[in-house]
Image (cartoon, rainbow over all chains, first blue to last red; front, side, top):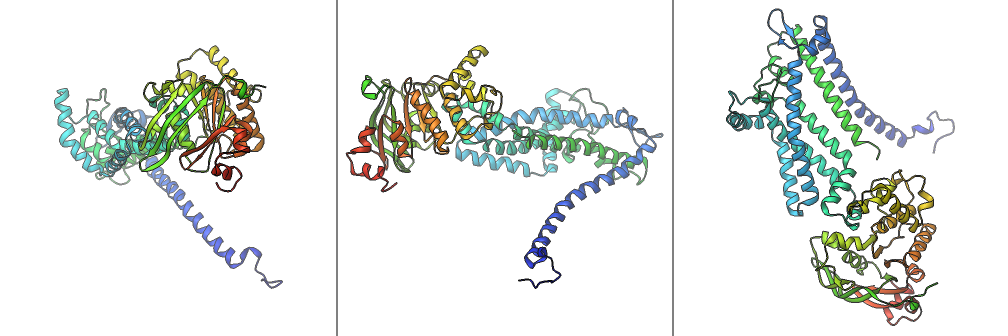
Length: 300
Length: 258
């Protein structure tokens, strides 16, 4: 009961106050994550854009030579961008078909007991640190690629693609499996009751119904691949040349940043150029995530 | 109007000593009966009496359940559906309408055309004819003819259920199973679906599982009463609802349990 004339507005009763506090706390927590993203981008931009005082944006993105410590230095990031693109494309070509098939098998075909085992192992695969995978790749995959194609070194884009393909697979499988399992049983049964075979029901009803999740899974897999650093640094050979086949050494954007950041003089154009590469990466993953988000929340 | 007595009764579906279980759970025990061609057989009974299980055994959707076991036989026109018929053929002949309308996430047209396409009808003109015919038979054509390309999910519940009926009709089944088709529908939509059923029995044999005893009384020619997995009584609907032979039937239809 409020006393008439008491200067506490109706909305400020004790319960209202606690409600208000909780809401503000939640609001703050939510905005902080946005704030961090914005701050990170501002920081990246501030450091990276310093490069464009000495090099034009075009020369940076389309330049064919990356000699950051020669004199005069050349900051052409094209080999690095293409290195990332090649390795990523290769990885996608490997991981998407296998990942989709694996997810369909787990979600739709496998008997119940096997399903649980498979799901657990796929998630376990996702938990292996990338450096460990890189190490295994270096010891097993690289010699294999070398002897298989009879080339002078196995440290190639192909080795990186294979490795990253395996790293992206758990992401793709587990998200896609969730999407497939979320398809209502009624769709499946409706199709079966009309005389569809198991496969027809999966292909023409379950997959299209889960399409947004399927595409999002692939996108997030790509995101994982393009951002991966340690494993690719160990097994792609790190030669900053424009690759013409998958059987050449390449150097990705991430590996460049990791390898050169330690030596770059702070505030130098070299230093700025690494941040500029960071911006390129940021923009690429941002677009990928945005696309994934678009498909995830697309209205059916 | 053609009454059931005026037709020559020919058994369409014959159930012989059918028992069904899922692991340790017994759901039907030694059930035997016949469904006549061009009749509506109402199947009533309280929850867990085995009604739905019975339907899912008819079109072998139970095969999807690894724990499913059965003994006994189901014959369609004298042919054993478990021994002598492949699944797509069987499910083409025995269509099913589910309790909750379950349109596929496609347009109205594609929902209806889905079945025919599965069975290799691809010509657009042919598909268009099938779609129109099926929608007319399900009393939905007038309501949707101008928006066949819109997603089926946009239809109301009752329209969705009639769409599902049309979808089943499009593959030209011989028997249609209705699994509590009106449980989620309002009285007007229910009336529409029941009207459709009455028309359909001229060409199809219908088995209607329903929780609504009044619906069975309204729609079906004969009614079967199931309790705890056993077939208690099967007879002409009029008889079941006026002079039931079994005390349990009487108790159920008069609302004393269930």
